[in-house]
Image (tube, rainbow, N blue to C red; front, side, top):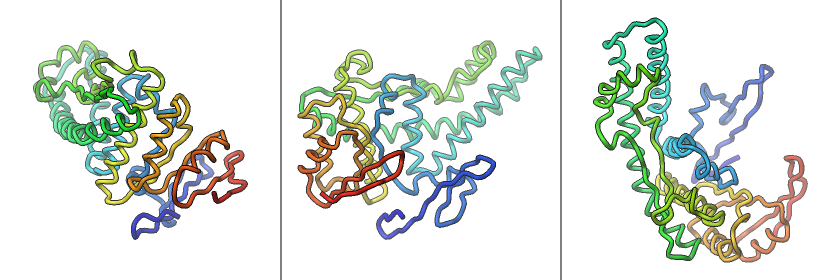
Length: 298
């Protein structure tokens, strides 16, 4: 049972005999999983977040899409439709190559659809980053307790020229490559610390602090939209952080900016020490093989 503001929601997940996942809300099965997005706002910080730094641009686009889709149903629909049209356009380009023919009129139909969808997605991403960056910088400084200045740079081909013009100018290039070389599916977020990319020049502690600040800024972004505090999940977040940064993090999440928080860790002594610095009602849950076997109020 999830309680947000005045709402009570029961959400469950089961697997059918055919192996298909079924998501239920108040015992009603969703027609599509996307209908569930944004119902229960939460922010999770986990070791998997490191892929935002270490992997390619696709991971960072997924991050932007996942956050914006929670607050904007139209954005979610646009990204689904954009990917569908992009796949169709790429299939058409391959067909042109295989069958050795070309129809400019047909390609332009896909250009128009991609341009409309891509431009809306691009504008939504700009607004998101503009709101996120100042809060992100504030949290980084608060955790790191240093003068290091982090920054997020949104990189898109659409910043150079409207997408419809670029698609028209690159028909020959797309035909030769047999895929669409222009569009918001090429966008990226450059993660910088000072004037340098954090992937190459940031220490493990700096990278961890960077990701924590990013997720806490995401928390503030969602809180400002929904008007109440999302759930915050901190999974194994203390690794690679020195004691000062751990202390700063715990001090932050224990104040009234945050609400319900779940912290997972394999070190019981460390959890007890951290909880001793927190106010309010706290519990320790002991989990074994995915099942809670005991709980204790501390």
